Length: 284
Length: 255
Image (cartoon, rainbow over all chains, first blue to last red; front, side):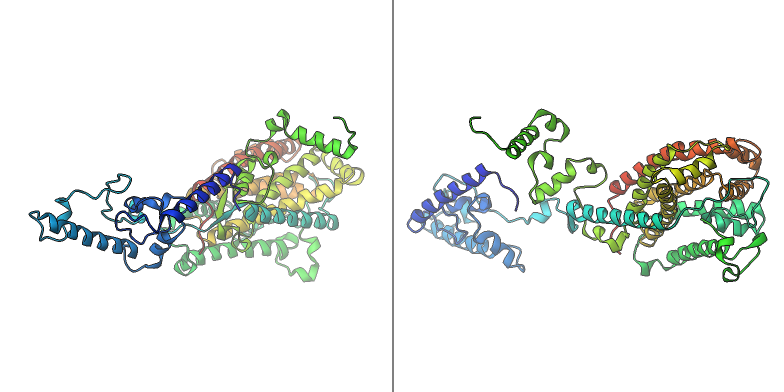
């Protein structure tokens, strides 16, 4: 899948081979401290095993086990190791005869810390789940690559749009009436279709209302929608009022535009388009 | 080079040498797939966007639901695409058009009858303009019904409303330019409506017409608005619109 550089692959292969060699020879006999049943990478002593997932060959038990038991916070193998260690330290503390010999758990403070084969002295105190100390997004969003998933779609859409436009333009000509003549007013005279809603309003109301107030309020109200609507949800069932208002608003203009386009004839009087034919009353 | 190569191999070798050369390297950015070749891999998929001008428009990854056609219906993108189509066909029309009352109509007629593909390109310009008004309007409706105008996107919605207004103005200014009866009287009706503006009604009308009545001055004025000023303004608003889409967290979430 991802192209890993050649030299890294080579290095990984070499390392793996070396590990296999070392592991195969060492594991059974070499058992310096009580070896806990952790993952397969056994070329290092278990003292460093707490953070041992960085080893290249450790695709074995540790990570899988951690995932398998979901109920407990601490993975089973770590619990087992901790129990083994406790037993061992209790054993060790008893013969020395120290003051705290009877206490089982806190005993290790008195004894010399166990030293690993390579001299490591650190101990595993606790396991902290990554989620609590790392800034991990709780719900990672499901994402796909823009190329090809989005770009192919956009390209196809633009092709379809171009094809439609070409074919439509080859078949239907744009209107070009006679040259403009200020002395010959056509009847009816109509604005472009998207303004016909306004022209329709003008037949019903005072120009001040129809030509200025209504479109002005409509536009400002539309622009302020995001500031007026305080409902944070975008689920349709939570926003019946907003959806109802918008639908009424859109239908209001759509109906006015349709009436203005197809139902207004000579003198902008109401007519039925199928009586007279659309051609005399409407043009794009 | 001891052995003779056949011309095809020679050409291929020249070409690959050219691709390794300084000129090619100056054109394509270091990570570009045109420099390092493309095989399908997650990294190369990212490089396609990251090392091309498309990075200004799209992020490397988008939400999965956002690429569904049924979510956006492509309306915003198609509006932008129609704007590009209109620019291309409009530039073509500009070669054959003079915005004076004496010449405008004849120029259009000549364009339709004696310029190769003149009629087709004028048709495309006209229909694309109507389509753009429709697609911008539908895009607005779509965005509203998805609740995508809500915070943090409320300001981008305002810009969108401005873009709708600019689209209508572009369409309306273009309506006059053929200078036929349809254009003249549609614009007469339209500008009369704007004359109802309170207090400055007459002044607004005068500024729009360039005189008391529609004439050559109006034609020149609307031509400059149509081919230069409004496109300039709308491109700026579109840039802000697209930029804000990404800055506001990409396309809105699923319902």
